[in-house]
Length: 158
Image (cartoon, rainbow, N blue to C red):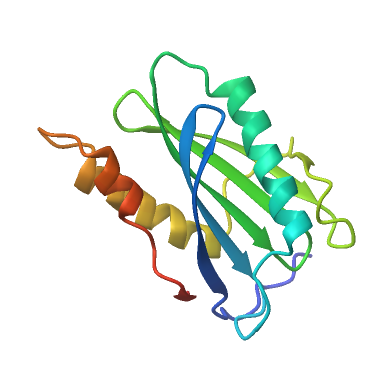
């Protein structure tokens, strides 16, 4: 028997800047399961591992001639693991994704997720913002990549 889900509790989401990785400009976000966590959302070794993983994913998959060279990533310190979603835009309005995870005890050992999964409810807050930013800035008569890159979900509890 499946247990019912726990009541929703907001989590801390912080923008981590725009990274230039694998020929793409990637807006990076961090999520922490403890909305009141006062430390950096990700430790420096984890950030280094996340950036390396983003670079590897984009070198392997982002070399598509339909790619806009723009995207976002979400590193999420969750209850079960550290999750990394690497997303990039192709062909107008299509977003591609690769998901990786690492054990909480080894947050810098990210490996590809092979099970079917898209995102959790907290990651979907970032994804919804990114979708709307893409529509606002890129699906227009005058696409504005800089406008898209500067349109970031503000830090907060979501």
